[in-house]
Length: 136
Image 1 (cartoon, rainbow, N blue to C red):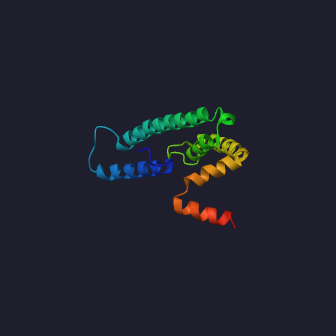
Image 2 (tube, helix red, strand yellow):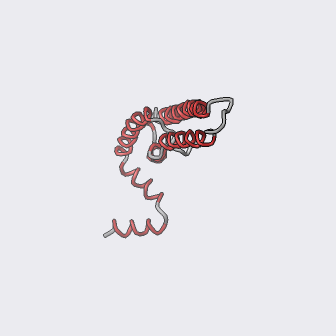
Image 3 (spheres, helix red, strand yellow):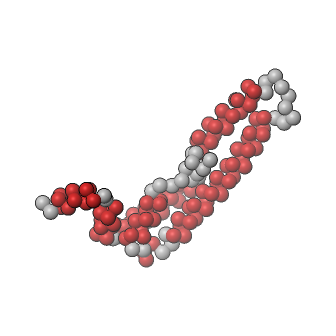
């Protein structure tokens, strides 16, 4: 399940090992349940790491022409960077932080354009409220 964090995966693995140990305490299965669960965990961890790498590489690729992005494109990229998937590996989080700073720097260079983008994201009621505040 890609919606689980690494911590949740580790907890689930631990719980499954305990459950398997309890379930097979009086039996001798043809394989060691804890070892089997650990093997599954290793396969899942490798798959999650591959997906994490693919996600961060995709974000880096989309940000490679950061200075050429307009406010809308940079804002979409920022929203994506601000909501990483739970599979994001700890080793990729540092890359994400650096990339987010670069994207925010680009958006700061486009402050007026970015403000307009943010305004467009508001629902009509919030847009009216915003306009009433700035026209005072």
